[in-house]
Image 1 (tube, rainbow, N blue to C red):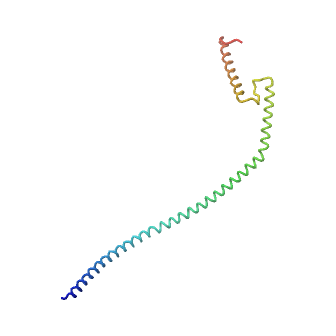
Image 2: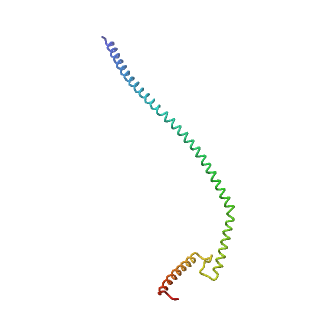
Image 3: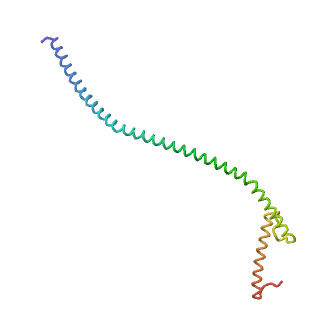
Length: 161
């Protein structure tokens, strides 16, 4: 065997080993691609129904939002109607009620002044709140002492006046 033949033999063996290694790598790659294909199919089988359910849920939510919008519009109309009704009632009854209230206050003031003429312990409408409370406290104290003295008088121990 000559040097050229040995070199050709070495190259042929090298190529045979290289082709064998490439074949093993390609077989493993083909197996990995098959497993990836199975995995993608499984994910697709599960994802498609989930996406369909999500789309159905979104449709239902949109339907509910349309109903809520309709309800909101109805409530706004009802609120506007209630406001219009209350302002109409205020305009219709407000003036006469204010006049009636003013008239009743005037009558009460006149009656109170007439009753209080010559009787300073009675309520006079233009008194301050402090004076009214003071007068009420004095009257209560006076009533309490009268009762006590009356009870003591019955027993014989009360003041004589």
